[in-house]
Length: 139
Image (cartoon, rainbow, N blue to C red):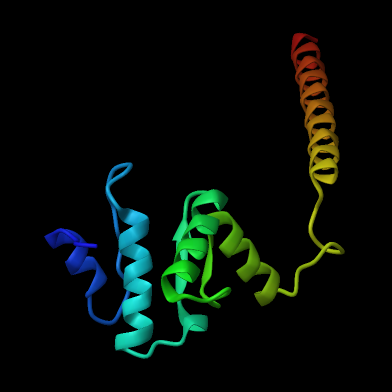
C-alpha cells in the first residue's frame, strides 16, 4: 500500500510522541498502525511501551485488530484506549483505586442530592436570619 507524504512522515517520525490529526476516511488508523509496526521493527520499541490514545472504544479496538492483522499475530501487547479509559486505569494503578474506594453512579447521585438538600437548608436559614435582622432594625 502506498502512503502520501504526510502519512510517510508520520509513520517514519523519529523517537518521541507523534500526533496524527486528519479528517474521517483519510487513513489515520492505517498510518498509526504502520507507525507502531515501524517503531517495533525499526527502533525495537517494546510493544508494552507503546500507548495509543483514541476518542472511542471502537477506534481503540479497531486499532488493535488492524495492528494484529498487520503484524500477523493474534495479540500485540500495545496499550490502546480512550482518554477516559487510559487515565482511569492510571488513577486506579497510581492510587490503588478499586470498587471499595470509587463511587458508583448511584452513590454519586445520592451524595449530590444530600449536598443539594444541605445547600437548600442553608439558603433557608440565611433568609430567616436576614428577616430577623430586618425586624430587629425596625425596632
